Image 1 (cartoon, rainbow over the protein chains, first blue to last red):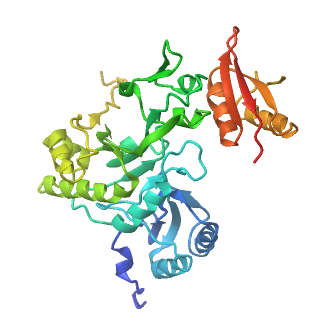
Image 2: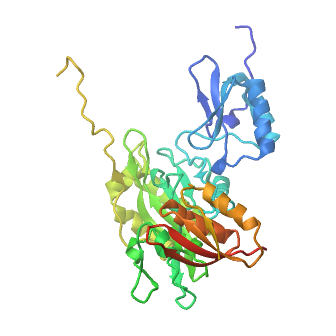
Length: 320
Length: 75
């Protein structure tokens, strides 16, 4: 009792990121790693700090964070300061815009169509920690329709997309694009040239990548944007609200969605965006987004889709 | 024409095998590569194109595998 209380800068705790553990006085410190990209010097610094203040391991979170385990709250300031020497910041928790997740993007991954890493950094810089007033808000960037980050399970999920266009004179009828087109949007016509059915296309750009003569080119590049996804106890899969949204509009688009969410969820308490869309109807959000993004927003869509993950039948023996 | 048989080898071993075979050829040499249907025919031509080689044509053989004609291009 005679001990003087530890001095802690409570401003460090404002955005969250310090999560209570089971053990007395112990916290998990969640680090801010947008897009999962970690420079080697930062990684070394984190290892040093974890060794000095934490437990015997760190945890790699599902959303690409490194979490320091078993940090005593009395060391918060020291941990923040030492991490800061390598520009490493602490992440967030609670009803805020979270650190965006992203795949490796297009710099070294041959499937990547867009620079997801650049977008993740930009969103992190401009929107990280913004309070939503209601619930958490998650953003993910996938570079192509393989969608490793599972973009549709986020409040706003971006998926790289390419609209292909064919220069028929440059086409040598090799058939590689048709062979590569998984959704069969391309079929070889009687004229021995590929024929394109846009309704079947998922905008993966495989035809552009494989074309030996560059007869296929990207007429448009951007993001397919799905909104209203979440996982957890009541999973929802987000649905398409915009197509070929340019990379440089991603931040403004998220901000417009958050503005609508804040307004429509007023008085509804702790509710996720997807459930608000189900209440208001998808068209209400389309109408809102059309104002600022008329060229990219879809004319119609469906509300986020409920997934019944509890459908299995189980009878507890003795309680029939 | 030299034939490089990549059949029965899965990705990405088939691509690495193709790279090794191309290494010893002169720039401008045209070769045929025999590639299995499925993932290999989707991946290998694309990867060879990304390495800078010129893809000339692709045809399916009677027994189902593909024959890729390619010119070695060294940058």
